[in-house]
Length: 277
Image 1 (tube, rainbow, N blue to C red):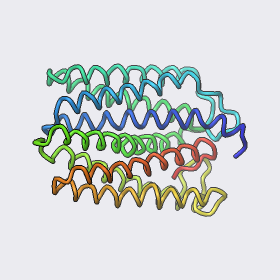
Image 2 (cartoon, one colour):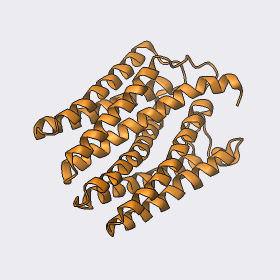
Image 3 (cartoon, rainbow, N blue to C red):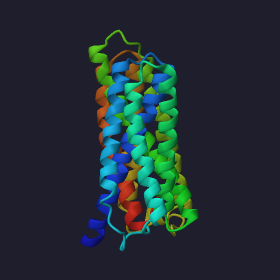
């Protein structure tokens, strides 16, 4: 990849990483907080952390360069403004959720509003960056599944640590998060198969990703950052069910490292070459 292309791609890759970490962590917290006995300390800490990370994405948003050598297009001004407004409102909502934990109705409203704002941010980002309306649909799906996998991995690690200070906490919150994460990884694996065999990116042809110039990165993406995390997350679920929380957390750390590498690779391949993997 030429240096000039890399320089343009990196800010977008960083935005995607920060956005998916913050949004996915908030989703997991909102679900687990609604249906399990997860402690308010964990919920508050993770929601506020998600807001801080999403806030970094918001700050980086104003510094995104105009793409001239990338597969994505320059965003129209109205979509640019809508993306930033939705992301900024999501950041505020994440903090509000953390501060409203003692008020169930207000917390539920914050959770629903945060989800809606995150989806709106994805849709406006996809509509603004994708070269066509048709291309924006799979890009929005990609941002959504990357959020669930990347942010969910971070949320699960944080919860695993909470058992060190709250040993009497039931295993249900952690096993639910791990099951959610495993389900998200299964969906990601299915999308990987569909996109690499049938196409889905910008002018991406069937089998192009697996045989073209980026084939090595794509095969590593499938094996190391999707299949390997599936195995790790399944192992962490089995250990969590036996209340071996330290072992489960350790496995989730390895999973997060692999998932982050995959998110970086997937984001870079799309913004630079238009490939969805």
